[in-house]
Image 1 (spheres, rainbow, N blue to C red):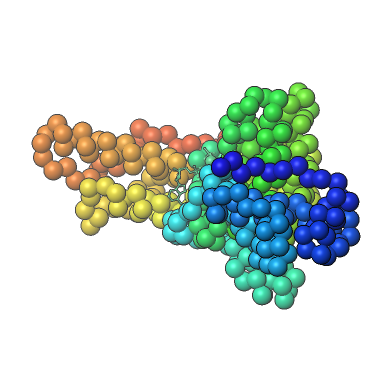
Image 2 (cartoon, protein in one colour):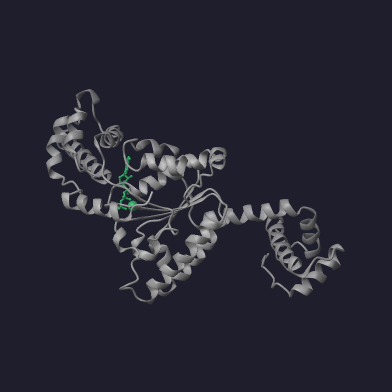
Length: 362
Ligand SMILES: Nc1ncnc2c1ncn2[C@@H]1O[C@H](COP(=O)(O)OP(=O)(O)OP(=O)(O)O)[C@@H](O)[C@H]1O
Ligand SMILES: [Mg+2]
């Protein structure tokens, strides 16, 4: 069976068609809107039953159960959109892998998570939670990790829009693809929509060509549209290069929050080190965690992950060569650590501090 969507007739014809079937005469604009919904309902009934359901049956069923029918159609559409956009569920435990001392965890908790979880209290005090957010900061500092953690702790869908998804049909179609994706995203409920490497599509228009302009212009239209809806949706973008973003996008009124994601303090590093330790062949009693914490100053989460990959490979190689159980010790770390250069140099930290002053808005 081919279940297709017929053309919408003129508003007057819609009035007559509904009148013929149901005996009720609606105003022209209402009838036109209803007719479209009746066609949607016909389509949904046909999908469910696996056969072509007649217009008369669909119309009567729709008008009798209008609220339920509309809800069912929207739910069905949403499921399709979620599948289309590769929506994923994130574990609530990701949030706990981030130390309370790691900025911007507390800020995110206070400004984003709590107002969404405590809806009654937010209403009482007139708190509106931000819906459009930019995370910026040096590479590997955990921006993507934060976005996944937010989706997990809220139990919302996580939908990542990769610049490559927007580019599939060639450079000329990026703006149009973005438009289509955002149209779909706006209908969702309880979803975190995330664009990573945002600078790749939203760089400054000064030196940009026609294509880049169409993308930033599209974003300038889409961000307010997303905010004007009442649905539970967060639109989050992440970038390493906040300076490259179009100034028009960064102005107040577009993105609600522009949040820096920076380095780890000792507690932040300890929390991440502990998680990775549990994956090694190790006797924790023989590990001087305090020393390793001290030796990993200026390490990003990505650097720590890399350190553990190196340590794990080293342990594997040792055991393979010597055919003897190799247990990782503090000495293993002390030996490996000088071979890994921390990503956060003084220069990067200084530049980041300047960006915080210039761009952050929380
Ligand atoms: N608190 C954490 N606990 C455990 N792993 C973490 C934590 N934060 C980040 N990571 C891991 O560190 C790596 C780098 O983090 P992430 O990819 O989120 O950084 P990023 O800022 O998005 O980097 P990029 O700028 O390259 O996109 C990832 O593999 C991530 O899973
Ligand atoms: Mg990232």
